[in-house]
Amino acid sequence: MTNTSPLTFEQKLQNYADLAVQVGLGLRAGQRLLVQSPVEAAALARAIVRSAYAAGASFADVRWDDDDVQKARFELAPDGSFETISQWRVDAELEAANAGGAVLAIRAGDPGLHAGADPHRLAAHQRALATYRRPYSHQVMTNALNWNLITSPLPASAKLIFPDVSDEEAVQLYWDAIFRATRADQSDPVAAWKTHLGKLHARKKILTGKQYASVHFKGGGTDLTVGLADQHLWGGGTSFTPSGIEFTANIPTEEVWTAPHRERTEGTVVSTKPLSYNGVLISGIRIRFEAGRIVEASAETGQDVLRSLIDTDEGSHRLGEVALVPHSSPISQSGLFFFNTLYDENAASHIAIGAAYRFNIGGGVESPEVFRERGGNDSLVHVDWMIGSPEMNVDGVTQSGEREAVMRNGEFVI
Image 1 (cartoon, helix red, strand yellow):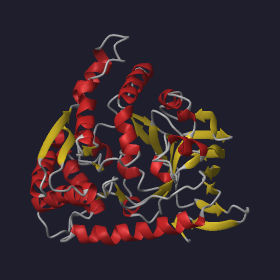
Image 2: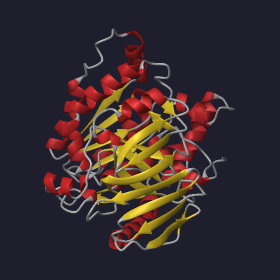
Image 3: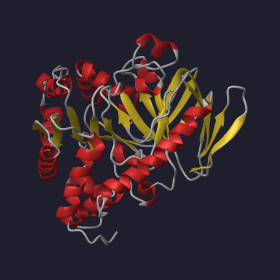
């Protein structure tokens, strides 16, 4: 875990901010930018604002979030009040998107913030927020704007990852892990990212060309066949807005992914890493599907929250994403569990309950009817959780029923 990079912390932080703006957002001169940031990540948010202006941004603003304020609400607010949301917070996202701007979110928080909170309160708030936020979520799911997610260490999350050191050292070790995973500790991280993204582009092109009817996961208690949407398109690396802005939605990213057909998933799947969802850790997830729909669901911890998530709407009983990640990914090889889906989903193959990205289905962005007809799933939620491992084998099943090896023991062989 020793930091061997010749760069100073300040240089690596600036590299990280520049990556978020230049590679993550692909920010163009004249665009405006909204940054969503925890108050504890102020140094990173400020660096991103400066990087945005250096790239030619016309206006950059920050919407601050505070975990302690949220925790106080779920501990102390009265019952019946959790459908109330601050609409202006979502309106800020819509304002930026509707003005042709970009949105960057620093996804960081205490993974156990709401441990012990009433799951009905959490579910009521999440449903109300997702309902009001749906117009913005639609723009994200269709790549109508350039958007990006990154993270930053917070003391609570850093101590979970590095429990045997002081708070200060845990935060520094977390920073080191972030800089390695994002290549911000390299002298030319933008060039390193271009090489990496090229490999993901090649992989998604091969898989899209295969047009498998389904992919079959077997290993570690999982025996799951995920039928794929008709005329599905694999994603990976960069995406494009309608105006041609190239951006990378997640930094880091190691996955290639596509849309399942909402009615064609069969079998049982077991999680291989915990899921940090809405301030609650859910571990030991076991779900069984029939005709695409969840018919049984359990978890060793956080089961009530898992079932509340599944019961959000009809679409949350089905899958919206299937993603392949090699066990040899840098995040997996770090040996760390980050308690943050942005990182943990890039350490293992995963699936997502809820909405599919419309750009993963040919014609899905242009036509909701085509999206639906070809098997796309719609929901208020989209929640990824990890199922990959060194024991996982994945086969692609062709339209004629033949099987082809895609992954063996967690590694690509295609």
